[in-house]
Length: 367
Image 1 (tube, rainbow, N blue to C red):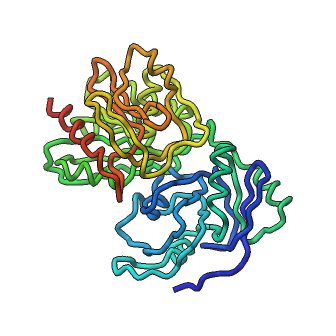
Image 2: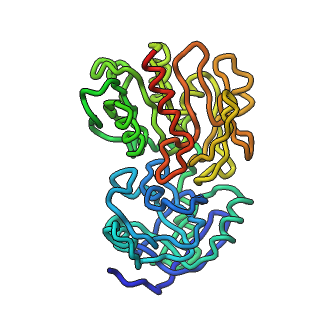
């Protein structure tokens, strides 16, 4: 196991704020939009979630790496975050199910990080100032040089990223003799979504992000369509908005999660916006206003639908609201078998309060 480094590293935010700490992962330099996740567990799922592509992750839990890395606890085939910021970077672990340390994992996949900083101070700063770009380096410690590099990093606002994380080839998941066939538009789909489909007798075929509705229909003739989660600005994805519109016109059942939720809104002339901070964690309360029931949810998004536009729309109705800030967490299209949620019902390791949404999708396909 690799020994813990004591070499210095620096984190520079776009507003000029500087944090000094110790190098973690690969020695080097990385950039991205900085954000924080409030989850107490699940760091490996966070690292490999394609929705985090292009982002530097700050973990609010004090210990990261303490239970090691297990091959089967991933949401994609590689680490997707641009970099890691944490308090205690633990390379020693005792969990028998783990295969390797976080340090070995990061070095294999060329991930740069910084540890031993006051993450509580950093999170409070981001919370007050909003999401912004940042740079981590364990090879360049000159602040002026880092500022010059950071100035070249594009804003997440207006950035199309799903085509960078989507599959390049179609593939299938599950039992081909299953009762239902679902076409998955892969904008950054998480593996546990596919596992949830398989658990419910769904045979899924996963298509690259820019596949048209006509091609999916001709190739697979699915029972229903799923629009996945993913990174970037939904308004910068006209190709996906057009696909969602075509699926709606077909009257086939459709389910969207996270980015899929935002695209369903855009397909119904409801705009999206970049949030001040976004929602990222395992503990967000959401109310299902249809059945008057509250769920503790897992969330990861930096964009959202414009609440006033949803409330004014005659095309959709609200199904879920966030109890912290009243943002719109779920909609369904009037007169169509189409619905979506902003949060993650497939969340692994949890919570599992919202798994019923997969069953709701099944019921639409039954009928």
